[in-house]
Amino acid sequence: MAARLGAVAGVAGAGAADARPSASLRATTLALLAAVPGLPLVLSAVLPASAALPAGVALAGAGALLSAAVTSVRRPKPLPHKSFAETMAEAAPSDVSPYDLFAGLVTLHDARGFVTAVHGRDRADMLSWMRDPAGRGYLDQIHVSDRIAFLAAIDRLRQGGARETVDIRIDRPRIEADAEQFMHMRVEMTALAGPDGALAAVVAQSRDMSDEARLRNENARKAEEAESANDAKTRFLAAVSHELRTPLNAILGFSDILAGEYFGRLENDRQREYVALIHQSGSHLLSVVNTMLDVSKIEAGRYELLTEPFLVADSVKACEQMLGLQAREKGIKLTSRVPRAIGEAVADQRAIQQILINLVGNAIKFTDRGGIVTIDAAREGRDLLLTVSDTGIGIPADKLASIGQPFMQVQNEYTRKYEGTGLGLSLVKGLVALHGGSFVVESRPGEGTVITIRIPADGAGVAREGDPRPAAASTVDFPPRLAAGAETVYQPSDDGKDTQDERARQKTA
Image 1 (cartoon, helix red, strand yellow):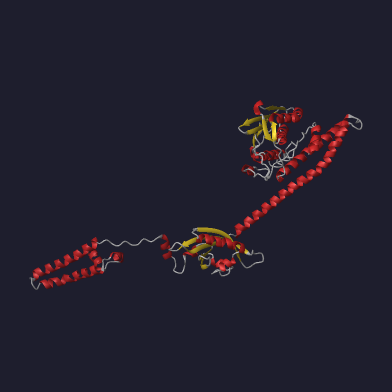
Image 2 (cartoon, helix red, strand yellow; image 1 turned 30 degrees about the vertical axis):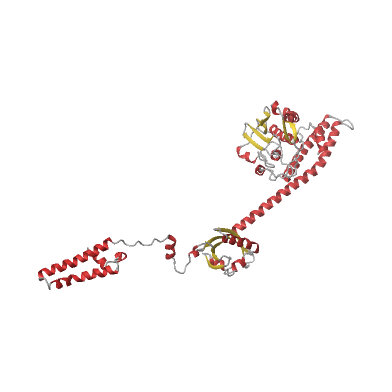
């Protein structure tokens, strides 16, 4: 009770200061407390002293208790709730703006883009090389070609946008000899609307992005160098291939004349054997040169496809006839399974035969004596499926992803025992891509390999002249650029027995 009376009287501790009653109530309470000794004296005038004293004290105490009761039932006024931002603003020094806590350079712009205030944690560092950004100073330091983008972002905020981001370059003095003239900055702008909803100010946070811009420029430069090197490689392959074909044609032609003994018989069988080896080696080298030419044509986008309806069974049979002797000499069984109802397909027949020859030739090369190489053809919906499987050495799982890359060979140059340039599968992959198809390789080391080719049987995947390339073509790993279709030629087998077909191909090449 004493504490409550003290609180009512206004003499309590600091903890009760917030719960004090009004001034009028405190005055009434103080008057009642002062009446404690005064009321008995007043009542003693009309009552005996023995009755006046207790009556006066009782009346004063009753008044004090009544004031305390009124104070206890009075509801205190709730304190206003403050947000976290208001609390932090009050806690910060009076001379520090909240914008000074943000990284970079923070500038406040009006609706025209002029700077009205400058803040930011890195303000001192940036202003050490910048000119005064106040007013039009910030705009005048922006690169001329970037100034339009900056003002366009301000205009979008003025039209009701909430935030904008723009990359600009800020002019700076050449402090060092090797320093760049412009500082790359990323500006993130936020609109501040006024009471009427119109744009009142723009808060722009500018941060240094020079390292990111340097990395972008370096990546672009390296990509350009890689593309230039790839173009140079393609031009080199084309030039060297053309230069090699001229002497090879002479070697093949004259060796063929010598083998036919048109101008006299050879002295002995050893001479005939050497002439046959010259012709066989020349045919093999010419096939490599033709493959290099085809790959360079595909990469340059100058390989033209001549689509026409043809019987799939005829192409498979032609492949068997060309490579059958090579398979028999190695002791390998070459078989095919083509349903009679497979009918025709619309594609470049020579390209399809080139695909089959390369796949079957690889299968024979990497299959040991006693193995089996099988060619399967089937229709699945609107697609033509060509599958070449073998029981050869197989491909390790970690090498499957690199199959089809130019000059890629599974075994390294020190341990491999199979000759080849590594261009066969890359050519196959390019020809399949030109037909709008897919190329899938499945293999197990020591058990064999299965390569499946899927192309549209109606020729719908072949891009016509002037047509945009389908989106699927951009996902092909090789060739990296396919601008148009392609043309292919017959690649002779390595056994040197198909000289008549080779001479016919040379006349039409």
